Image 1 (cartoon, helix red, strand yellow):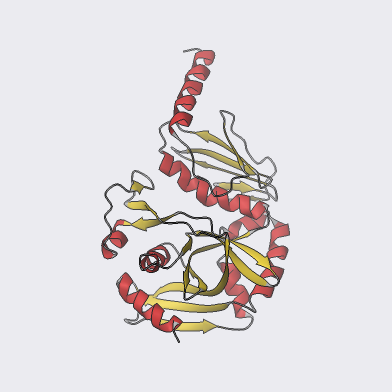
Image 2 (cartoon, one colour):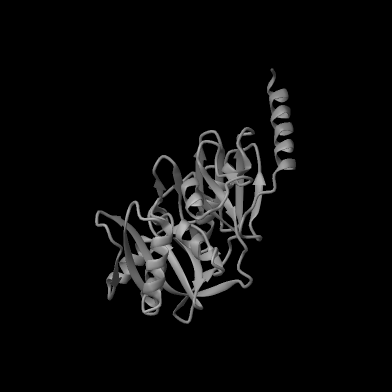
Length: 296
């Protein structure tokens, strides 16, 4: 098959791909272009073999999905595998690529899920599997407002931190759905090989909500839940550790200093607490203990 026919075939496949996909992306002022020309960061300040980036550019290649490139905080170029599902493409578009766009704008993204409880903005942070999304959903199902999932942009005004509410779905494992008495039927998998699903939720009616309290969820070997408040200078370190894709800052030196100054500011108005929980404790039991703590 000639190169010209190959190119024509690829373009036809892409036309079909575009016609059946309308990618969800939180920021409406970002241009997203599907192309056959792979863009790379030619002069990376950080390169771990997967992510390549500098202050204004980002790229990554995901086998079987495609190549993702972001620049200037307002442009994304995608070279897609025509066999990739929309859900899987959006997983990387709305995760690592979205995080890069926010960093390029110097809008600090935190790795946490957020909701409103008793008129206060609550963020749950933690490693994958810690339970932040399932615990957030437990509160949402009781009619508390949903704000964000996984990637939480933070806007800072007058030394206060505000959650930029941009989400209308949350990612949940099948086991979490069962514990929350939710049916997986009709839900979209985040990728074909994983029993994790996009669960649609009502997006927050306003744009921002003030952040009051961050809980850092960790698994421990004890049989009970333990709360430990973090105070003083340790709050800044704890906040920095929860920046989404913290490794990006190794290639974005301007952000490191800028974020540090902002973290010092907002640490004075935010309460930070470790939530140490047993690995096998049910979601509802964790939620009950968290409610009791918040009502003190």
